[in-house]
Structure formats: C-alpha cells, structure tokens
Image 1: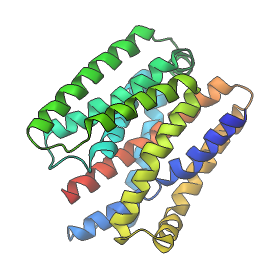
Image 2: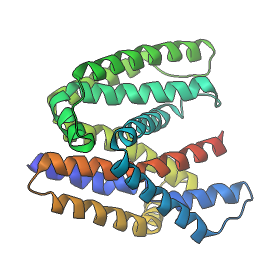
Image 3: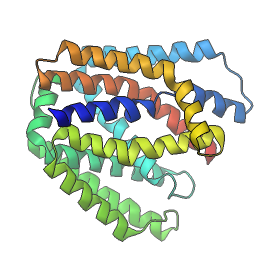
Image 4: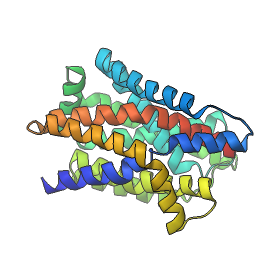
Amino acid sequence: MIEHVMAYIFILSFGILHGANDLTLLQRTDSKKKLTRNYLKILLYYVLFVFGSILIFYLVPSLALIVFVLFSGYHFGEQHFISKTIGASFKTSALYFTYGTFILFLLFSSNYIATAEIIKNIIGYSVAKSVFEIGLLISGVSTLAFSIILILKKELKINPIKELFFIVLFFVVFKTASLLWGFTIYFILWHSIPSLYDQIFFLHGHINKSSFRSFVVTSLPYWLISVAGLLFLLFIFRDNFEKSLAFFFSFLAAITFPHVLVIKKLNQNQN
C-alpha cells in the first residue's frame, strides 16, 4: 500500500509536472520561429485534444490503448536518444519508436498478470502473454538493427555496454517490482526528470533554482487541473485498485497525446 501511495505521489508530482508546461513550450517555439498565435486559441485546441482523447478511450478503448502504447513508446525512445543522435531522419525516428516500445513490452511481459488485468478493465477482454512476448522480440531486434545502422553511419553516439547495462537493470527492476512501481521508477528517473531538465534549459538557457521555480509557476494551472482530475478518479475507485489503475492510465494517456506532439515539435525546432 505504501509503495502504491509513493508511486502515485511521484507520478502526480514530477510525472505530471514534466508535461504541464506544453503551452509555454509551444509559445517559445513559435517565438523562435518568429510566429505569432493566439494563446487562448492554442489553449482551446489543447483542451479539446485532451477531451477528444478521453472520448476515444470511452468509445473505442482498444484502439485508444494501442495508440497510447505507440505514442508513449516513441516519446520514451525520443527522450532517451535525442541527445545521442545526429540530425533527424526516418532511421532515428524508427529507433526512438522501437526502443521505447521495447521498454514498454519489457515492463508488460515482466508483469503480465497485472498488465492483463488492467487491459481487461479498459477494453473488456484479456490479451495473451504471447502478444507481449512477440512485441518484445520484434521491438528488441528492430532496436538492435536500427542502432547498428545508425552507429555505422555515425548518426548515433552511444556506449553499447552502458545501454546494455541499462536494459538489464530495467529487466531486474521490472521483474522485482510491481507494475505500478516499475513503471514509476522508469517514468520518473529515466524520462520525466531528464525531460524537465531539457525543457527548463530550452525555456531559460540555464538550470538553477530560479529557472526551476519559474517553470513550476508557469506549469501550475495545468498541473493543478491534471492532478485534481487524477485524484478524483483515484477517490471514486479507491475500493478497486485494478479499476483505479485502469482509469489512472487512461487519464494519463489522454494528457500524453498532445504532450508527445509538443515535444516532437520542440525537438524538430532544435534540429
């Protein structure tokens, strides 16, 4: 129980915070490209995108779940490799996607029973373990293939031993931790905090207490709304942990979709 509470605290703080400043990032990206857009119009589109995502989860949950996994996979891989790749190309995008989905399939395969239960609560039926194992194999082989191609073309600068060590570490963490706790450890330490660092640097050009404070202040309205929504869902389903997790991840998915697009736009602007 304490583990679950800690996981929710980390996700609701660092996790939600790393995606709570998207509108400011969009405005800064536009200003660097000397574009001007109406802030309220951007806010309206953003909110409609989130509610549209929630509606898709309600109407076509299986499709929404697949799209969420694919979007999240690309987003995780992009954050991990963006500083290690040279230039933007189909091959680099493919590496982002295959690596991120590999990490997700590794998490799902390592916690199949809990994952299957959550998926059943979202879409109404179970998914065989072989689906995750095949996904893990295909994404793993593809990641290896694109990594080798990019290294040979000198478009990827990594330490293969270090990358392999991290994958083994993730496997151990995912195998020994619960689904929620394993996801939290990866999501916060390997994704949210590095993303926060990149975003603060993009907005302010340096990292210190002042820039972090400024980032939090501008993120506060969206962060508070997101946290309030998630806490409401957790309260409603407080007596059914599996059900609460299903709605928790569905809500996370809804606010993830526009965030992934914003970060992709930001990275394209920097290349």
